[in-house]
Length: 83
Image (cartoon, rainbow, N blue to C red; front, side, top):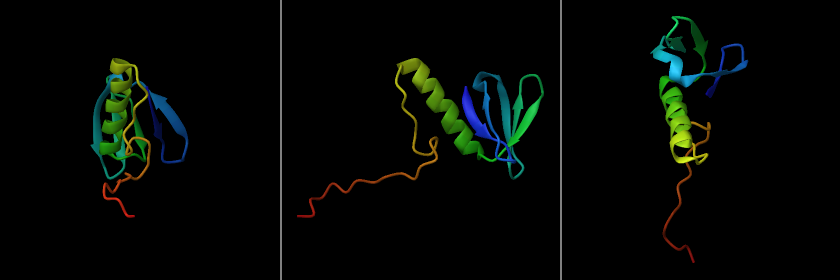
């Protein structure tokens, strides 16, 4: 299950195993196996990341999510010592 945001700001939780395709129109149209669909704010790449993170969590038992899936900007750590 993944959380998505409809255009009116309402959050929905969908069964990612039932997603048949995601079309960019320029919003994302998420079409399910039963041919029903939702128009959501998230980009196709964000939806893919959320589905991958959900399956990773199921397979590994860890709650790992990518920065993009959580809606965060990546954080880069400088390995050089500034002192």
